[in-house]
Image (tube, rainbow, N blue to C red):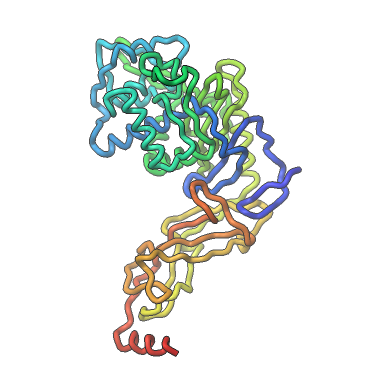
Length: 412
């Protein structure tokens, strides 16, 4: 037995005893941290890099700068990379073009390095400009541990002419497990449709064309694969493998409506297809669901009835979470141990309370949640778990006579 932290309250629980250098498990919606092991340590991420690359692609598609059926030309250097037997790829020809959708699917399903490099060129015009875009995007997302040298996650030396002459050939992308989880959370919130691709075990690339290839996933936890488990319907996200990285995997699973994200880094990887990273992920996922119970907060189960409205027709208002939310507590803990403190947004405060008038469903601030008097950790945030809250009803403003009288009484 070992002492672990359950949502902020110390409790006894068997450790999952993961055979990895670094790991983390979080709630996919709130980022509540459910498990940590060296999660701040910067380690090689290999092809988990492609989550950042494809996030940028999806951003440009959303902005109308790129289109799914847009034809992408293949440079001779990228065509050469696609035929490197030491790298994961689909074959690309410099004599023809491929759609953004084809290259995107190849990047995520079979982790095609040349395909994502071609997408980078389509976005930014050159490999180095795309790497610069990746670096700036990482900063915008507050992925402070990110070190990026290639679009795909291969080493600078493996990138050949697409790499940097001034950088060591062994240099490769690194990030912490926490930042990989944070990136994954952002992607799932912003582009949940990515799961329609990452859940595929096989798919055709360039079907009927000169590069026709049946792609196979590297995610062995998907249905029909060797590490699939019926009680863990994993549907993403991305593997990563290199000599320095070992076996990496950021996985996600939605069980009974409660989605979590797990990251394991530097699992054993003795040979191609080594299942160690998935065995460790399965162990972690099962441990989370066995160790925690989800508490659902929504308008029916969670109402804050004492929000002061100094100038309201009524002096108190009711609020609830802005959207239905899961908070995880230990199996040996009680919902009664959850405590809540409202922090109103600056634009919605007056006279030490909530301003009036306000319409129903107005997001007015946050509620900070503690468990058993202790903080609940959340990735990307300091302090305790914080959730947006909204008004449950219209809040009317008192007439000027009532307001004047209240101001007068406040003097005494």
